Image (cartoon, rainbow, N blue to C red; front, side):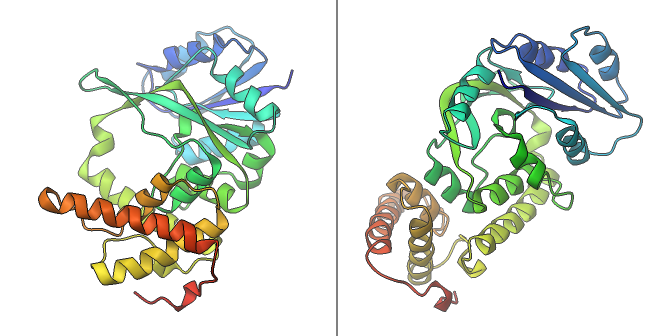
Length: 314
């Protein structure tokens, strides 16, 4: 029975951390260690952690707030398991989460395993289903436009996390860049279709300040991913006029389809859509038709011709 190291950073998480810890301790797969890093909390987080007597818990206490990237990297260094599972201190794990992900990893179906999840809006109490992709080629190709894995759902081989860790220079998209590095290195991704995490969403996560920082780091991560894939960074998806976007978008899709030959038509269309201006009304059927025509042609042509993608200068 391989040991699974669950990593849980916490900062001022007094209200929710007990529920998060209990959801891990109650897993049907018991052979685990739970590293909980209290990152200099000013509330009662440390007291809650100390209230658990389970020997599987490995508490780490910091007297000052060093940031979640530092906390995660230190836990990665200390993890002793064959696999590392990520878990935020305000989320809730399904009781069979570790068991189901471990089965896929032990069968060698993937190197990095996420899952679908529930999204709990903390302001309204409304719970919604996440919108996910599941196959390796879709998950890795779509990283050029957004982060395809939810951090709290991820479990993978410990040696991969110890090789890459979180980049301390990218503080609002650190998980996104971690998946980008792993994807570019050739590690295989998989999302299980079972919803194995309840992820809490707060109003502060959608604040204008947070969104502006996230927008800038997202562009930075997307650019670095293209560079790691040896695709010119000027092919990064962004809204462009029709004549330009067809040429540029097609070059990007063809390059991605050669690297990830099993990308679905829907994933191709989702990537191409980022080159389009978002217009509603009468234009909607035409923009949808354009993106699916581009996707179908890219899939066909990428396997039947050679394209000089470096020649494009939008």
